[in-house]
Length: 311
Image 1 (cartoon, rainbow, N blue to C red):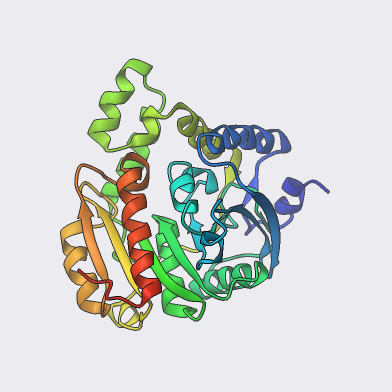
Image 2: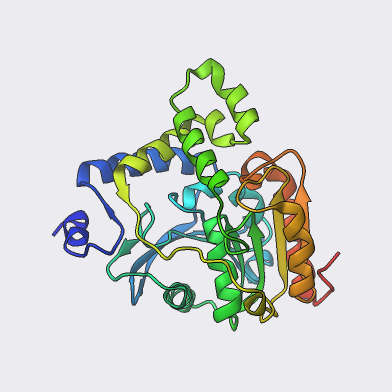
């Protein structure tokens, strides 16, 4: 039975609306993947919630291949292709795995509902176990940042560090963020000549990367998303986190209030590092890729050496 037909028999799981739209989306994804480093290999990991598709990127340097690996967790409504500006630089210094999260468009196949934060933590832990990874750094963007933060709270045993890029899970998502999402999606239909100006005004780099724009637009039509809501962690829950944590916020973020969180998170999580990146919004790893890549690599180096990570 085709995957989309299987999913339709389970209404609480993410699914593509048809095989034709599934293939159309994957074609758009592959155009984005081609902008980054080629994956060394791909593999599927079976979990309690379905099959997780994983891309691996290996360093050329044999010594770097022995370092603690990094696992990338993408944002909502996307897939691992969104990491195209980062995979080459990050995988030059350590192994990198990029996972397609179940419930979102991508090559993972969800077969059981994933409604609660506990389910999300179990899924990610089973994925890491299936990859044979006992110790990893986690890097998550937006919704993926919530998944990573949730893991640090609920299932931290495998974690060497966590990095959150403009993440969910820190405060209730306000109307301003949903308005920005709607306006950004509408702006993808604007004439080419207007897109750079709109991208600057909205702090939305998707608009000026044709391949990424096509992938996002296709995904909205091709897939029905089903996954846990990124409920904010309470202050008591944040206080349980002992994994070295790095919070990166865009100066123009509409998901969180950057100045509030850059003060709050280090106060609640001992040793946490938090900073605001200027001239960016919700996608710092895209429009400030070189800067973010270097910051993340330096943070992981410090965590591996047991050095203080707070600044």
